[in-house]
Length: 552
Image 1: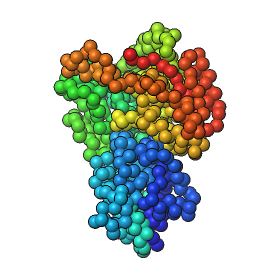
Image 2: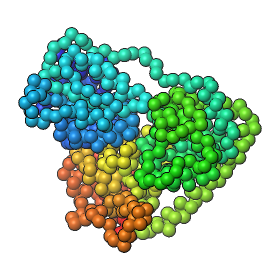
Image 3: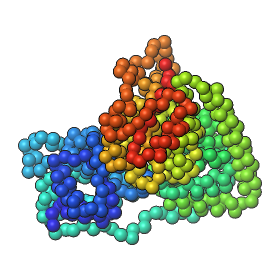
Image 4: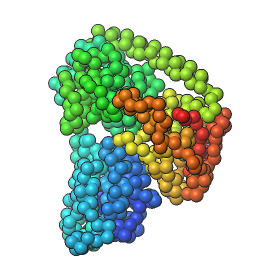
């Protein structure tokens, strides 16, 4: 049997259903072999970064492990930014790239380079298959490493001659492996004791909660604690229902601001990790002085990695959360105090919602359209069971207020901070949850990083509604420029350099039509909901460019 057959059989053995890729010459063995493996679908993209981005969102949306097919050094280079995002998102995926014939290694062949070294910084494991006899073992290890906590991408280089070598070692996957650790009862007791000693506990939830399908368990724990639940500044999932009275919101991106946000909390419970992703430096810890810090993790390597904890517990998240909840509920006195905190949180939630509605109304009739109005109208036209893929950035807070997200899979966004993930991610999200409508909301600057994704949506006839928010600027950079000037006492009377997307203005409808996606432009808010509803009623992809307010 040839190496390429062992490779393909390994994919089948590990349950791979989809490859995302852009074909190249050194990938000929893989592409030619696909015809003998009809159970594996191949999503074609026009640039390698789209393949990596789509695969990451597919992994998050489906819970399955995809394969990415890249082309030698330039192709891998194109994909590295999205691979970084996948690493930050803990997306399990096996990234491959064809490599030149190893017999030419010393001749400096065209497109040849050290692929393993290129991929290593943005993967959990990076390796090249040197002989066909290694293929089965390397692929088995690749899937193992990609999926063990914390999950993430691995990279395998596939030299074209190795794919054609003969071997007698066949593909085989490990079966009936049970790796979710049960929490140590002593650890549960220690953590519960610290929680019950607190008068004002809070929770910070990471994407691990959604990936572990532990949202309901977290809801039960937050109610048993009487604790508000905060979310990371950059997140991939909905880890707690955003309309629940205990849902607090998104944390800022520097330690001082996080500490101020936590206010008088005397216990901070971190679920998952790592915490925290900061943009700006401030001195001190992100926790209030004297606060107890506890952390629950599924991966021992991440427990207490960035911050000292007063109690740490490694365990399967649903089980661990359930055990903690049961312990807290066994104390009647503690539950009386928790109920009082829950009542206060409900009142705060109602007050915060009313304040947001009042602010939105003051901007309701602006021209150009306000972000709050745009999000409300988009929500009004979107089916209740839609998956929302969000890269709205400065409109993200308004989107979170307009839409209701209650379960994992309702919402997906990018990790790592690199832009361009939204349009590419929508491809993977739709193929990961094909039975649900998909809405992709992106800023105009972000959209241009992965605009080629529109062609893949048309090519594969995917029912996705793409909404591009057009303000003709990198608005987030302008906000960050304001922050920089304030923090470093820099000149604040200057304009925003090179941050406007004008002269010429981009015509997203024409761009989309050139890639086979019909579309329209909306400038009047009272036309937007109907346009979105009409787009969902169509088959295939559709794009709506929405002109909104900017920061000038």
